Length: 382
Image (cartoon, rainbow, N blue to C red; front, side, top):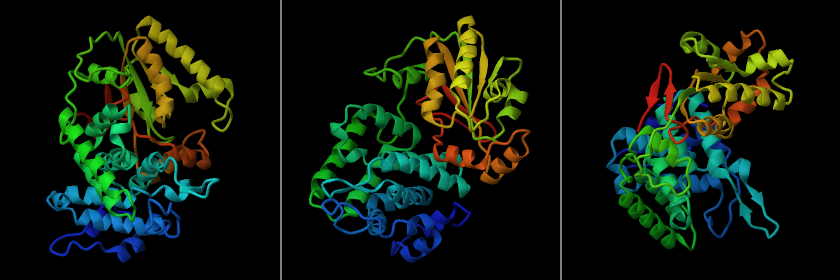
């Protein structure tokens, strides 16, 4: 695999021919080569395996007049998304009892896979997360108006990527197929565009009244996104998120500023529990400490890997129940630095554990907290 993310701009079709250089794309990316021979349902993908579909989808994107009108950087980013949109299908494809071939969960798994690929290629975090969000939601426009959670999805995409781009990706996906319901799906995609335009989020992020209004909207089913929620927060809870070796302890030493710190590593040491052991006792002890600070209305820092959204929610949900203002500090370093800094720790985390964590890594976003900060890189803002 090439180690430079700018390869996407180099491979991106350009005028006047707008040709997709597929042989070179296959030569450059091992994850493209993995798509060869991966079967698909013949009803919805009569064109053949996943590699064939991905090539056809890339060609369909390159033929879109709206895509050609984007600035070069926008074209390259969306082209990367179409190349990566089915990257997780080799890991998700299965044959059902009735003989149908399905790939359940490949969009969500694709989000995780895309993050790792683009992180290893050195892509800037905003660019990487933009592509990952498009891949995660690329099927939504197909049946958008049937989803009860559509509003939250399109508002999330408006904050992380762009709904017009999502529709363009979905259009390329369905056009790059041989299937009987193509026209019906294309009509659904157009309805998706109209829905997003009606909410004012087709081409811009949702304009929440405040960070607290946004935080409460994504936590409250049926909440009106225009509702200016009263800010009743009592304390600041800073939740760290980062792989082992990403520099969480270093950040605490420089920025905790006297605030109490809940450290999972310290609790493991005190309890004599290894990172490879069961963590139930560690989790219980950390939550007990957090409740003490929350009840007292005391600002504090929660120092843990918190790699997945599910694990962060265990912290954030507790904080929200006690009216905490939640700030996530997402710490990132290049892959080689993670391994090097982890190896230099007094108690290094086994490489197998780090690999497992990378496979679960969901980068924090603005739907989870009042603020998301990335030291030395950027602050996420709508």
